Amino acid sequence: MASKWPSNNLTHIPVLLKETVDYLNIKRDGIYLDGTVGLGGHAAAILSLLSENGTLVGIDLDEEALTRCKESIGAASNCHLISDTFSNIPSILETLNLDQIDGVLLDLGISSLQLDSPKRGFSYRFNGPLHMGFSMTSSITANEIINTWSESELRKIIKKYGEDRMAGSVAKAIVQQRSDSDIDTTTQLRRVISTVVPPRYLNKSLSRIFQALRISVNSELDALTEVLKNFMNYLKPGGRMVTISYHSLEDRIVKQAFRGHAKECICPPKLPICQCDHKAAVQILTPHPVVPSEEEIIENSRSRSAKLRAVERL
Image: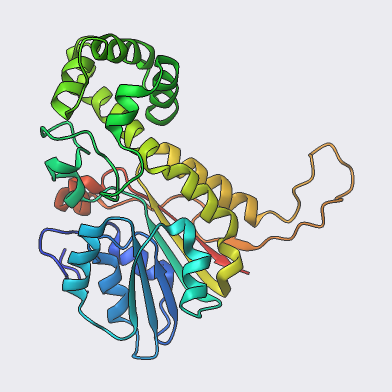
């Protein structure tokens, strides 16, 4: 189905676009922040619904994506594109002299631009350096993790962030291989993993292990946890937060955070009388996550695992 919103890039298909815009409930003069602006698919749709008095702030760590986004969206005076991480939203808003805003979007998925670029090292499908940083100036790379972290540390992140049952065997194989020579490329890493993972499970394990490395390099779950603690502080009453996650680790963090902020009482269940004085800060708008339609999945197979959740500030 063709979108009624402008497309900034024919090769970039924003996930759950209509649903995202609907749940953000865009006000023409409102202030909105896209914390993972990427190539600007969602941002372009939001911007098209704003008047000249509205404001859009777009944040991304990926310098290449931000450059392309600037080229496609143009030099709109009410659009601010900033190279940073969304965990720094409070300081970014302060710099822009923005107190409270009407909506926040976090599309947590890795983009096609990143996955399909061999030099970034995000995908096991291409041969490239083991980088995996959202920013090319990242302080740590997957190469450093693979070649310097201990076997126990490797096992821990593969199990925790990749949820892969072969974590122990893979970590041991990596350490054994690097005792002979460093593992510097995605192809070399894939070859090592293939020595201990049966062929029928290989692609799934590769996806999980590369995900674990990417999460570790970019501290993704730490950044997500941080922003979910404090987003109520800069959302106006009636303002909304929308998240799109792509794996169970992210979705679990979002779901639990939203539920916690929506509770009236957070006292232990055994206490007969509430003593916490906690008040619900948000209303959950999506009791169950919104997922792509079959039609969208056919059009964009990478949307298959997407889950959208939304809350409104009370």
